[in-house]
Length: 440
Ligand code: SAH
Ligand code: SF4
Ligand code: F3S
Image (cartoon, rainbow, N blue to C red; front, side):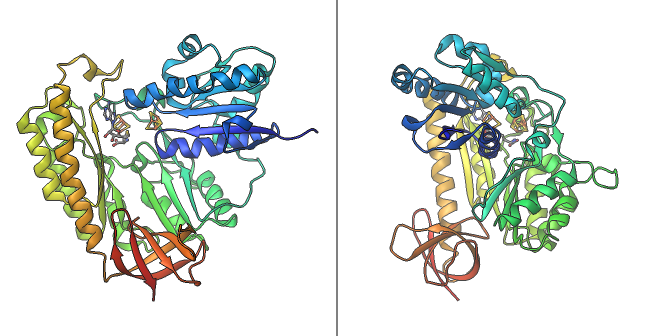
């Protein structure tokens, strides 16, 4: 065999895309590809895309434009679009950007080797099926290398909730859970390769109901308890959760399972019942607040994170004030907030849109409040002792960076701080984006 071919993958969007990109690299590894960090060296460029907001989707086309010169210089260069834009727009992508050779959706990328071969023969290759076979099972037997201390593991995909603003049910398809055995096998394999912390992923991860070895459906909590028994695995996280699937056993696990970290991402989107109803969220403000109370009763120190949309169609000043009020009641340690973006084909796209300047204004106010809360919670860590899993070297000489139990970045300068090891650290300082501390 000749020199290895080089693959450049750029990933947009959520953690599930990060996970998928790793699987895609493995799938193409079987075709002799190794990954590269520079598109100039690549024999194949793959964009793993996100369709959640208009800006994210449009970025794909500007990014493709940047590769035009490369393609002209190197006619054999293959350019592919994967992920949620591929699923949503399919052939349209090749029409808008004829230099694209290959388009593959999030449920069919295990077929990348065939698609790559087809593109190699100068044909356009497109696959946006929702096939019945399990892509993860087909990808499983690839040789796997050693890896860093943290990993994502997709356990559930797709969504049946159809929030009125959201494309995910269309781009990722119906909700499916992977069987327990396959998740456990993959987790054990990751731990053997050096992983100490696993984040279980799903668009609605707490709706997980995979088939257990006993033939019964297992809940996410039961899966977590089984993962808890794997020696060498030290930390478990999961994301993203929907308030309606936050079951009692999962709440209890937050209080009782030592490896389950005290961090919960629980998006609410809005604090106004009127808007929540129009969003088709199927929970209300009160049920969310009561849920947060229950979770905090089980695990008082848990850090709560959320997602917000401002400027959803018909959102009034009062609706927005309700959201601000909910934020004050919850007190978030972290949050992601977005201006509503009209997505073609979703129910909310047809409704009366909020003035973009009004929406920008609300977003700025909401983000200021969140930043204040986030900073206060982070500052309150000073003087406390937390577990830190070291992930990489810091910028300063001898410095290491890791994540605390609460997912704060922590800098430590100490020769005992080793990548892949967890230490008890006393927090001494709180900066704009991270903490600093000393090993105790
Ligand atoms: N499954 C998760 C979220 C998936 S999308 C959940 O149910 O919460 C991630 C976030 O993007 C959402 O929580 C929402 O805040 C935001 N989002 C989704 N669609 C959007 C849209 N059309 N405009 C703006 N933000 C959007
Ligand atoms: Fe989108 Fe709603 Fe499903 Fe989350 S629950 S992925 S916001 S439709
Ligand atoms: Fe984006 Fe698809 Fe994830 S639309 S947020 S990449 S599921």
